[in-house]
Length: 283
Ligand code: IPD
Ligand code: CA
Ligand code: CA
Image (tube, rainbow, N blue to C red; front, side, top):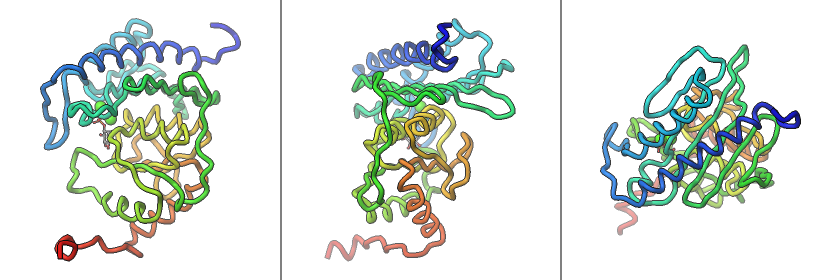
């Protein structure tokens, strides 16, 4: 190991190669007409999700046969290792299946101990050939160039993002958050890939992002990217984010407090602008 590189940076080189290879595989499938299968009512999966995860697991196995892997499609392989990978082989499956080119591969590596530490993360968007990477304590990069979160100070001037779950969507209150924050900002984007939303916060394209009920494979790499780019990630009440938190609030740090206050108001049911009545509108 060259002495000027940290352990995490050494992992990053290999992770980058794996993410690029998986991204190329996704693009091959993207150009075919794939059969959509369903995990739930609107929870899609395709052959590409499974093939990409298989490839990623094979590559990890070849290099680090004792590492644990948690992947969306195959679940947890627990070998008792101090290292655990979080793999979302295709984040943005609904987009992918409909031919909408917003999706990515997300890989993160955690070293587990008295404190679990995510040491490296890579997110690759094969449609734009954008490779986002972060190593703990070493900053965040996009195609090798350092990136930072935005300097936007007010929610009113911010562009933010959110997502809606595909599982148990009828139980999710996010439409109220979407409505309120839309009225209080430059807009709320819902592009359909939580991992890319987090990359867009890390690179300053978005000033903030939130989502309910994300899974560890959705957030593990993106949260490290935001933090290493100088941003902040917590639960909605400001308490520490954990991979199983089910609440993700990621911002440039500067609008974090304002979004937290808005969320507290929405949860309390205060100051909610009424949703317009379509029957009234039609008249
Ligand atoms: C989904 C995407 C989407 C988010 C959903 C996730 P998947 O991941 O990240 O943006 O809103 O909550 O489940 O299923 O495409 O890997
Ligand atoms: Ca995902
Ligand atoms: Ca996925």
